[in-house]
Image (cartoon, rainbow, N blue to C red; front, side, top):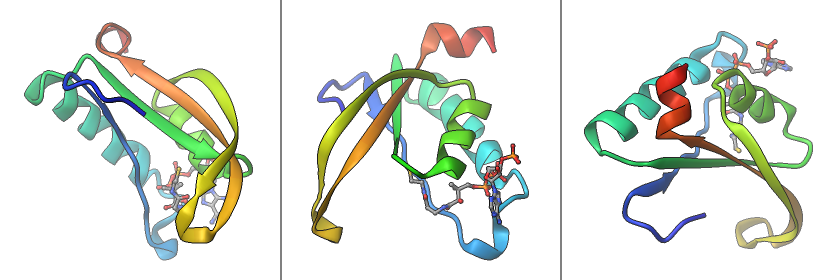
Length: 97
Ligand SMILES: CC(C)(COP(=O)(O)OP(=O)(O)OC[C@H]1O[C@@H](n2cnc3c(N)ncnc32)[C@H](O)[C@@H]1OP(=O)(O)O)[C@@H](O)C(=O)NCCC(=O)NCCS
């Protein structure tokens, strides 16, 4: 999502038995702290594919701001195209949370 050295992208996966306990929002919040405080990032990008309501919810709960949707995103591992939704957390927004 970015080529800049002061920005990064976050992604996550959790085993099914652990879903629904708020584990990933807690992990994402700590990774945001790590990105902004330790790595001195200015922006953290994140995304989910259309239909992944659980991931959308995690991103909403963590305060990411919706940016745009991209049609026909290549997913090489699945050999298919999907619609992607991109959100952003800036350092300034994070400091207000
Ligand atoms: C997306 C994912 C990380 C969510 O992690 P999590 O720790 O379960 O997150 P939460 O506990 O905050 O749950 C998020 C939402 O998912 C939904 N949800 C949780 N467990 C669910 C379950 N077993 N069945 C249906 N919906 C569920 C709820 O709506 C919940 O929102 P709520 O707290 O407002 O009710 C996890 O589902 C996952 O690893 N999925 C597979 C990989 C993936 O999709 N990664 C993201 C790629 S963008």
